[in-house]
Image 1 (cartoon, rainbow, N blue to C red):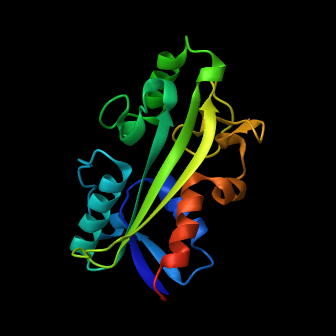
Image 2: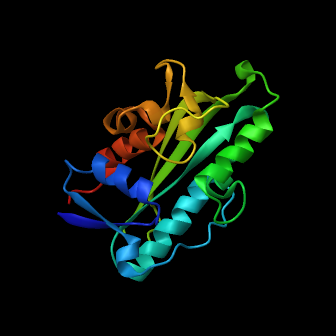
Length: 197
């Protein structure tokens, strides 16, 4: 098994990525195992932030690193919360606080105009100086509902409604979510492009 450092302290992302990689020749090690703190996400795009995080983890662990940057993009809010999804309601904001702010901003918007998508970028860096990281993206279309539904997943999942499934992301099983989600799409592309373990 080849070890990869996951450049995130988010337990939800660790669960999802570990599940998606369970049948591969790669083993995910969270950066917390190296006492490595999160790096400041100073990029203005998902790609920039994912590269910043992967480079930081590779530099301080001497392992190849994988980083994900993802978030929810709401059309009527001009793309908000976007790269600020995890800190929409402020630095160190809880999922509940972020969701409450999103619902507040959308309360007067008709359902037909609450289109949104989850975006994910996953970056693989062979080392901290890697000049050509592997970059894979996934997108998952839906809309925002104003009442939480379901208890699975994390983040905005209870409010991210999937018209084709008649449920929110939080109402899907973990296996089904991994099969169709933005992160699942991006990781499957990455698995096709990773060098042999």
